[in-house]
Length: 341
Ligand code: UDP
Image (cartoon, rainbow, N blue to C red; front, top):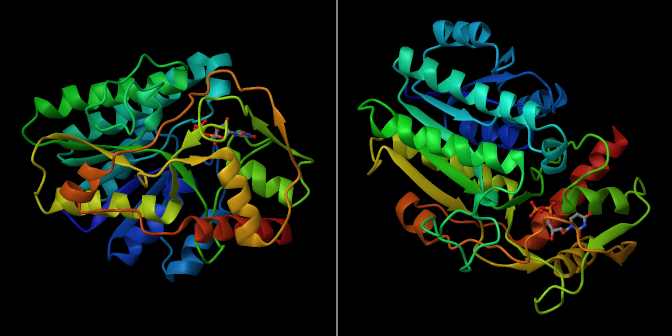
């Protein structure tokens, strides 16, 4: 079995493409499966330009088990990183069936084929959304999860639970769930980054599009939260740091270092940053002024969530390294690249 080849589902997407770059940089061969449902071929060109390697690419939907089976038949790999999923919280509330169908079926197909073809390792893209409005801050991996407030969040919780149940009774299978906090930024080359379709839901793409003049004005959702400056607190993790965490997780698995069949790690910086701080930081890092206004709270937002990263630091041997102003410069460089191409 080839321990140096990794199947990356959703590898053309935002987190997937950055992870593919880091995997290639670490000496892995990568097979990407993506259906371009929220990405396009430009990310594959970006990967090739950055690394000098064109990864194997199969355009397929992970819900299509026959298509996925062909990938398992054709390529030998010991590990899978499963990114392929829908991720828009608001859309998931409006269209729950779409989310349950896609996110859960693709996950089950991947795991069933791993079992059938004796491919032991899977890294699953989970999210800090599983903590909801946490009772203790910062959150550790032992902080109880809260009932999901959206079908999207529920698919992350359900897939975590399925993964735990499946790998703990199987001698061969190992699963690592990485709970991402708020991934932001882009590759320093500005050749890959986030490509939101339509109006961005997330803060940083909204900021960069406002700075580029695509959006008129950023709305800051609430300045009356019980936080030092009244805006919400989050843990913004640089996308390249996040991508590196996947490589470290894969290294842990292929080296046979997992202590349990199912392991969870928080992937964040460990530092809370407010919306105002992020906006000011973006202005300062890029020497520009952003048009923004304070607006009403966004329904469903939690006041504050940030990571205790002790476990990722000590057990996984990973920590966030990039400075926030570099990350915000990279986010702006990427937006400029997108506007100019
Ligand atoms: N936010 C904002 N304006 C926007 C988008 C987001 O003020 O246009 C705030 C949002 O209320 C939250 C933070 O930015 O406090 C991060 O939001 P995002 O949607 O990026 O991530 P979340 O933590 O909600 O998953």
